[in-house]
Amino acid sequence: MEFSTKTEKYLFSRDQFRLKHQDEFLRKNVETNLLLVSTNELIISLTFFTSGKNLREIDNGLYKGDLIVSFCRIHFIISDLLLGGELVDAATLIRKQIELLGRLNELSNGIDIEKLSNKTPNVKNLKTGMRKIYSTYSEIAHSASPSIMQLIGSTEVEGRTYTTLYPEFQENSYAQFQHQTLCALEFYNWCLVFYLDNFPDYEPEPDAILFNIAFNQLKKIYPDSLLAVD
Image 1 (cartoon, rainbow, N blue to C red):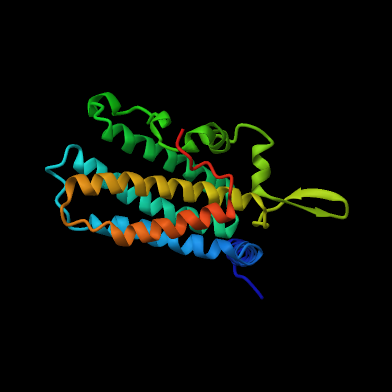
Image 2 (cartoon, one colour; image 1 turned 120 degrees about the horizontal axis):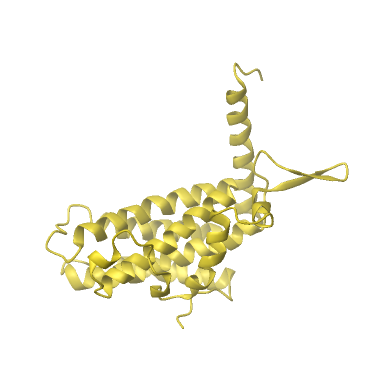
């Protein structure tokens, strides 16, 4: 195949490697398929519920609404990055999700918005063990050490190890997928309380079904997950 520019050649090759990584990711652990589908459906269901809702009368409602939409957008970008093998970039956004959840919990705890503005959310407010790995994700986001940069990927050619320009399949993608799912399930728990407290028309059963499917699948794939509240 001929290309008119080097950029065109790069983007074509990148797409092929990303598709290869997605195939390997889903094929090597078929249990991830159901977890991926159920988690995605849960997040979009929770977000669609706020469509057209009047949030102005709720304390910090507009801010909370923006955070809900942001979480949804980022969730699907992370899914795309993980399936494509872009682990450093996915990790950076998982860190953002952890902080966003911290901010949602701060708002629910009644902390004055003026005290929160322009400050990094306190992840100690998270309800699950995700807060324990926040420092690791911050290290990845900051490119803080050579060991972290190994997540870019490498390959061995004639006894020499090279950093790959294109994504290569890594088992680390499953660990990040676990953490993305944990963020999604904590997001559900926050939304459940928020919706029940503020919207009499919210029907929790459909989302509860999706949550239970995702939760049970998570425990099946990752029996030692960080979901437990401590």
